[in-house]
Image (cartoon, rainbow, N blue to C red; front, side, top):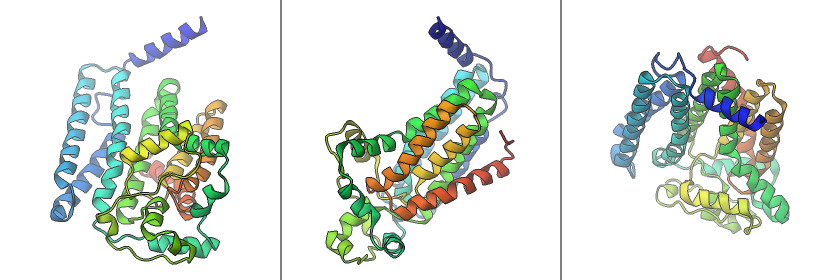
Length: 327
Protein backbone atom coordinates (compact mmCIF):
# COMPACT_ATOMS: atom_id res chain seq x y z
CA UNK A 1 0.00 0.00 0.00
CA UNK A 2 2.82 2.42 0.92
CA UNK A 3 4.63 1.60 -2.33
CA UNK A 4 1.49 2.26 -4.37
CA UNK A 5 1.00 5.57 -2.58
CA UNK A 6 4.60 6.60 -3.22
CA UNK A 7 4.34 5.66 -6.89
CA UNK A 8 1.11 7.59 -7.21
CA UNK A 9 2.70 10.66 -5.61
CA UNK A 10 5.66 10.46 -8.01
CA UNK A 11 3.36 10.24 -11.03
CA UNK A 12 1.25 13.09 -9.68
CA UNK A 13 4.32 15.29 -9.22
CA UNK A 14 5.51 14.58 -12.76
CA UNK A 15 2.25 15.75 -14.28
CA UNK A 16 1.66 18.68 -11.95
CA UNK A 17 1.71 22.09 -13.59
CA UNK A 18 4.90 24.14 -13.49
CA UNK A 19 3.90 27.79 -13.73
CA UNK A 20 7.54 28.87 -14.22
CA UNK A 21 7.99 26.89 -17.44
CA UNK A 22 6.48 29.61 -19.64
CA UNK A 23 8.73 32.42 -18.41
CA UNK A 24 11.67 31.78 -20.71
CA UNK A 25 14.76 29.67 -20.25
CA UNK A 26 15.73 28.74 -16.72
CA UNK A 27 18.87 30.29 -15.23
CA UNK A 28 20.72 27.03 -15.63
CA UNK A 29 19.82 26.89 -19.32
CA UNK A 30 21.12 30.42 -19.77
CA UNK A 31 24.38 29.29 -18.15
CA UNK A 32 24.65 26.54 -20.76
CA UNK A 33 23.95 29.02 -23.57
CA UNK A 34 26.57 31.44 -22.22
CA UNK A 35 29.22 28.73 -22.10
CA UNK A 36 28.18 27.55 -25.56
CA UNK A 37 28.44 31.07 -26.99
CA UNK A 38 31.82 31.82 -25.41
CA UNK A 39 33.41 28.56 -26.57
CA UNK A 40 31.88 28.92 -30.04
CA UNK A 41 33.61 32.27 -30.45
CA UNK A 42 36.87 30.67 -29.32
CA UNK A 43 36.43 27.81 -31.81
CA UNK A 44 35.84 30.23 -34.67
CA UNK A 45 38.93 32.25 -33.77
CA UNK A 46 41.19 29.18 -33.46
CA UNK A 47 39.43 27.08 -36.12
CA UNK A 48 42.55 26.17 -38.10
CA UNK A 49 44.42 25.03 -34.97
CA UNK A 50 41.79 22.62 -33.65
CA UNK A 51 41.51 18.93 -34.51
CA UNK A 52 37.73 18.65 -34.90
CA UNK A 53 36.24 22.17 -35.07
CA UNK A 54 33.38 21.24 -37.42
CA UNK A 55 32.23 18.43 -35.11
CA UNK A 56 32.40 20.78 -32.14
CA UNK A 57 30.18 23.32 -33.89
CA UNK A 58 27.71 20.60 -34.91
CA UNK A 59 27.53 19.43 -31.30
CA UNK A 60 26.68 22.98 -30.22
CA UNK A 61 23.96 23.20 -32.83
CA UNK A 62 22.46 19.97 -31.48
CA UNK A 63 22.43 21.37 -27.94
CA UNK A 64 20.65 24.52 -29.13
CA UNK A 65 18.08 22.56 -31.15
CA UNK A 66 17.27 20.11 -28.35
CA UNK A 67 17.11 22.88 -25.73
CA UNK A 68 14.80 24.96 -27.95
CA UNK A 69 12.58 21.97 -28.75
CA UNK A 70 12.11 21.08 -25.08
CA UNK A 71 11.43 24.69 -24.18
CA UNK A 72 8.79 24.99 -26.92
CA UNK A 73 7.18 21.76 -25.71
CA UNK A 74 6.98 23.16 -22.17
CA UNK A 75 5.20 26.26 -23.51
CA UNK A 76 2.51 24.03 -24.94
CA UNK A 77 2.23 21.72 -21.95
CA UNK A 78 3.25 23.24 -18.60
CA UNK A 79 3.94 19.93 -16.89
CA UNK A 80 6.80 19.36 -14.47
CA UNK A 81 7.82 16.28 -16.44
CA UNK A 82 9.03 18.58 -19.20
CA UNK A 83 11.06 20.59 -16.69
CA UNK A 84 12.61 17.29 -15.65
CA UNK A 85 13.29 16.49 -19.31
CA UNK A 86 14.99 19.86 -19.79
CA UNK A 87 17.15 19.31 -16.73
CA UNK A 88 17.98 15.73 -17.68
CA UNK A 89 19.04 16.85 -21.16
CA UNK A 90 21.48 19.43 -19.81
CA UNK A 91 22.94 16.98 -17.30
CA UNK A 92 23.37 14.46 -20.12
CA UNK A 93 25.10 17.07 -22.27
CA UNK A 94 27.82 17.30 -19.61
CA UNK A 95 29.17 14.07 -21.11
CA UNK A 96 29.54 16.00 -24.39
CA UNK A 97 31.08 19.10 -22.85
CA UNK A 98 33.75 17.20 -20.92
CA UNK A 99 35.75 15.80 -23.89
CA UNK A 100 35.13 19.12 -25.61
CA UNK A 101 37.51 20.76 -23.11
CA UNK A 102 40.30 18.57 -24.50
CA UNK A 103 39.56 19.61 -28.07
CA UNK A 104 39.80 23.26 -27.00
CA UNK A 105 42.74 23.20 -24.60
CA UNK A 106 45.08 20.85 -26.46
CA UNK A 107 46.38 23.73 -28.58
CA UNK A 108 47.84 25.17 -25.38
CA UNK A 109 51.09 23.86 -23.81
CA UNK A 110 50.67 21.02 -21.33
CA UNK A 111 51.33 21.91 -17.68
CA UNK A 112 51.60 18.47 -16.05
CA UNK A 113 55.32 18.87 -15.44
CA UNK A 114 54.59 21.84 -13.17
CA UNK A 115 51.89 20.05 -11.20
CA UNK A 116 53.88 16.81 -10.85
CA UNK A 117 56.83 18.88 -9.59
CA UNK A 118 54.64 20.68 -7.05
CA UNK A 119 53.30 17.28 -5.99
CA UNK A 120 56.85 16.01 -5.46
CA UNK A 121 57.88 19.12 -3.53
CA UNK A 122 54.76 19.00 -1.35
CA UNK A 123 54.78 15.31 -0.43
CA UNK A 124 58.29 14.14 -1.29
CA UNK A 125 56.80 11.48 -3.58
CA UNK A 126 53.94 10.96 -6.06
CA UNK A 127 50.86 9.75 -4.10
CA UNK A 128 49.09 8.63 -7.29
CA UNK A 129 52.08 6.52 -8.26
CA UNK A 130 52.23 4.47 -5.06
CA UNK A 131 48.71 4.49 -3.58
CA UNK A 132 47.19 1.62 -5.57
CA UNK A 133 50.42 -0.41 -5.46
CA UNK A 134 50.41 -0.35 -1.66
CA UNK A 135 46.65 -0.88 -1.29
CA UNK A 136 45.90 -3.66 -3.76
CA UNK A 137 43.34 -5.53 -1.65
CA UNK A 138 40.43 -6.49 -3.98
CA UNK A 139 37.76 -5.27 -1.54
CA UNK A 140 39.46 -1.91 -1.01
CA UNK A 141 40.02 -1.56 -4.75
CA UNK A 142 36.35 -2.22 -5.50
CA UNK A 143 35.29 0.32 -2.86
CA UNK A 144 37.46 2.92 -4.56
CA UNK A 145 36.00 2.18 -7.98
CA UNK A 146 32.49 2.04 -6.57
CA UNK A 147 32.93 5.55 -5.15
CA UNK A 148 34.32 6.85 -8.43
CA UNK A 149 31.51 5.20 -10.42
CA UNK A 150 28.95 6.81 -8.10
CA UNK A 151 29.76 10.32 -9.35
CA UNK A 152 26.90 10.81 -11.81
CA UNK A 153 24.41 8.78 -9.73
CA UNK A 154 25.20 11.19 -6.86
CA UNK A 155 24.29 14.12 -9.09
CA UNK A 156 21.09 12.41 -10.22
CA UNK A 157 20.17 11.52 -6.63
CA UNK A 158 20.63 15.08 -5.39
CA UNK A 159 18.78 16.71 -8.29
CA UNK A 160 16.09 14.02 -8.15
CA UNK A 161 15.51 14.54 -4.44
CA UNK A 162 14.93 18.23 -4.95
CA UNK A 163 12.65 17.58 -7.91
CA UNK A 164 10.40 15.10 -6.11
CA UNK A 165 10.65 16.31 -2.51
CA UNK A 166 11.55 20.01 -2.53
CA UNK A 167 10.49 21.22 -5.95
CA UNK A 168 10.51 24.91 -4.99
CA UNK A 169 14.30 24.67 -4.74
CA UNK A 170 14.85 22.43 -7.76
CA UNK A 171 15.76 25.18 -10.23
CA UNK A 172 18.11 26.76 -7.70
CA UNK A 173 19.81 23.40 -7.26
CA UNK A 174 20.17 22.92 -11.01
CA UNK A 175 21.65 26.41 -11.31
CA UNK A 176 24.27 25.59 -8.69
CA UNK A 177 25.20 22.20 -10.18
CA UNK A 178 25.44 23.27 -13.82
CA UNK A 179 27.16 26.59 -13.12
CA UNK A 180 29.74 24.83 -10.96
CA UNK A 181 30.40 22.35 -13.75
CA UNK A 182 30.97 25.07 -16.33
CA UNK A 183 33.24 27.06 -14.02
CA UNK A 184 35.40 23.96 -13.69
CA UNK A 185 35.27 23.39 -17.45
CA UNK A 186 36.53 26.93 -18.06
CA UNK A 187 39.42 26.28 -15.66
CA UNK A 188 40.20 23.03 -17.49
CA UNK A 189 40.40 24.92 -20.77
CA UNK A 190 42.71 27.56 -19.36
CA UNK A 191 44.92 25.16 -17.36
CA UNK A 192 45.70 22.09 -19.51
CA UNK A 193 46.61 19.33 -17.06
CA UNK A 194 45.98 15.70 -17.98
CA UNK A 195 46.66 13.98 -14.66
CA UNK A 196 48.84 10.98 -13.71
CA UNK A 197 47.08 8.38 -15.87
CA UNK A 198 48.25 10.21 -18.98
CA UNK A 199 51.39 12.03 -17.87
CA UNK A 200 53.00 9.10 -16.05
CA UNK A 201 52.61 6.89 -19.11
CA UNK A 202 54.06 9.57 -21.37
CA UNK A 203 57.20 10.20 -19.29
CA UNK A 204 57.83 6.62 -18.13
CA UNK A 205 58.36 5.05 -14.71
CA UNK A 206 62.09 5.81 -14.67
CA UNK A 207 61.48 9.55 -14.73
CA UNK A 208 58.92 9.22 -11.95
CA UNK A 209 61.34 7.28 -9.75
CA UNK A 210 64.05 9.85 -10.39
CA UNK A 211 61.61 12.70 -9.68
CA UNK A 212 62.25 14.10 -13.14
CA UNK A 213 59.22 15.64 -14.78
CA UNK A 214 59.88 16.76 -18.35
CA UNK A 215 57.85 19.41 -20.13
CA UNK A 216 55.82 17.68 -22.87
CA UNK A 217 54.70 20.92 -24.54
CA UNK A 218 52.13 19.92 -27.22
CA UNK A 219 52.53 16.14 -26.82
CA UNK A 220 48.87 15.58 -25.93
CA UNK A 221 47.79 17.42 -29.03
CA UNK A 222 48.81 14.27 -30.89
CA UNK A 223 48.62 11.53 -28.24
CA UNK A 224 45.82 10.46 -25.90
CA UNK A 225 47.05 7.12 -24.60
CA UNK A 226 46.52 6.55 -20.89
CA UNK A 227 47.64 4.01 -18.31
CA UNK A 228 45.57 0.92 -17.62
CA UNK A 229 43.76 1.61 -14.38
CA UNK A 230 45.39 0.00 -11.29
CA UNK A 231 43.76 -2.20 -8.68
CA UNK A 232 41.70 -5.38 -8.77
CA UNK A 233 40.96 -5.71 -12.48
CA UNK A 234 38.26 -8.40 -12.15
CA UNK A 235 35.92 -6.30 -10.06
CA UNK A 236 32.53 -5.14 -11.32
CA UNK A 237 33.08 -1.48 -10.50
CA UNK A 238 36.59 -1.60 -11.93
CA UNK A 239 35.13 -2.82 -15.21
CA UNK A 240 32.43 -0.12 -15.16
CA UNK A 241 34.93 2.68 -14.63
CA UNK A 242 37.44 1.30 -17.11
CA UNK A 243 34.75 0.93 -19.78
CA UNK A 244 33.54 4.48 -19.16
CA UNK A 245 37.11 5.75 -19.44
CA UNK A 246 37.68 3.91 -22.69
CA UNK A 247 34.59 5.58 -24.13
CA UNK A 248 34.76 9.10 -22.81
CA UNK A 249 38.04 9.85 -21.05
CA UNK A 250 40.44 12.43 -22.53
CA UNK A 251 43.78 13.91 -21.44
CA UNK A 252 42.18 16.93 -19.79
CA UNK A 253 40.40 18.21 -16.70
CA UNK A 254 42.81 17.20 -13.95
CA UNK A 255 43.19 20.49 -12.04
CA UNK A 256 41.27 21.08 -9.89
CA UNK A 257 39.39 17.83 -9.46
CA UNK A 258 35.80 18.53 -10.50
CA UNK A 259 34.88 15.10 -9.12
CA UNK A 260 35.77 16.43 -5.69
CA UNK A 261 34.53 19.97 -6.26
CA UNK A 262 31.12 18.88 -7.56
CA UNK A 263 30.78 16.12 -4.95
CA UNK A 264 31.41 18.60 -2.13
CA UNK A 265 28.90 20.95 -3.75
CA UNK A 266 26.40 18.09 -3.60
CA UNK A 267 27.22 17.65 0.08
CA UNK A 268 26.35 21.31 0.68
CA UNK A 269 23.12 20.96 -1.29
CA UNK A 270 22.07 17.80 0.53
CA UNK A 271 22.83 19.26 3.95
CA UNK A 272 20.30 21.95 3.13
CA UNK A 273 17.65 19.27 2.55
CA UNK A 274 17.96 18.26 6.24
CA UNK A 275 17.15 14.71 5.12
CA UNK A 276 19.67 12.50 6.94
CA UNK A 277 19.70 9.45 4.61
CA UNK A 278 20.72 11.48 1.56
CA UNK A 279 23.16 13.58 3.59
CA UNK A 280 24.90 10.46 4.91
CA UNK A 281 24.94 8.80 1.47
CA UNK A 282 26.42 11.77 -0.42
CA UNK A 283 28.89 12.66 2.35
CA UNK A 284 30.17 9.07 2.64
CA UNK A 285 30.60 8.69 -1.11
CA UNK A 286 32.39 12.05 -1.29
CA UNK A 287 34.83 11.02 1.44
CA UNK A 288 35.61 7.85 -0.50
CA UNK A 289 35.83 9.84 -3.74
CA UNK A 290 38.62 11.96 -2.26
CA UNK A 291 40.71 8.78 -1.97
CA UNK A 292 39.45 7.17 -5.18
CA UNK A 293 40.49 9.93 -7.58
CA UNK A 294 44.13 9.54 -6.51
CA UNK A 295 43.91 5.75 -6.18
CA UNK A 296 42.91 5.23 -9.81
CA UNK A 297 45.53 7.81 -10.95
CA UNK A 298 42.93 10.20 -12.37
CA UNK A 299 44.32 13.08 -10.28
CA UNK A 300 47.33 14.33 -8.42
CA UNK A 301 46.74 14.84 -4.70
CA UNK A 302 47.03 18.60 -5.18
CA UNK A 303 44.12 18.40 -7.66
CA UNK A 304 42.02 16.92 -4.87
CA UNK A 305 43.11 19.61 -2.42
CA UNK A 306 42.24 22.28 -4.98
CA UNK A 307 38.82 20.67 -5.46
CA UNK A 308 38.19 20.80 -1.70
CA UNK A 309 39.21 24.46 -1.52
CA UNK A 310 37.35 25.65 -4.60
CA UNK A 311 34.01 23.91 -3.96
CA UNK A 312 32.70 26.22 -1.19
CA UNK A 313 34.16 29.29 -2.92
CA UNK A 314 32.41 28.47 -6.19
CA UNK A 315 29.18 27.60 -4.38
CA UNK A 316 29.07 30.93 -2.55
CA UNK A 317 29.98 32.82 -5.73
CA UNK A 318 27.10 31.16 -7.60
CA UNK A 319 24.60 31.86 -4.81
CA UNK A 320 25.66 35.51 -4.66
CA UNK A 321 25.80 36.03 -8.44
CA UNK A 322 22.37 34.53 -9.11
CA UNK A 323 20.92 35.87 -5.85
CA UNK A 324 19.78 32.42 -4.84
CA UNK A 325 18.10 32.53 -1.47
CA UNK A 326 19.67 30.56 1.36
CA UNK A 327 17.96 27.28 2.00
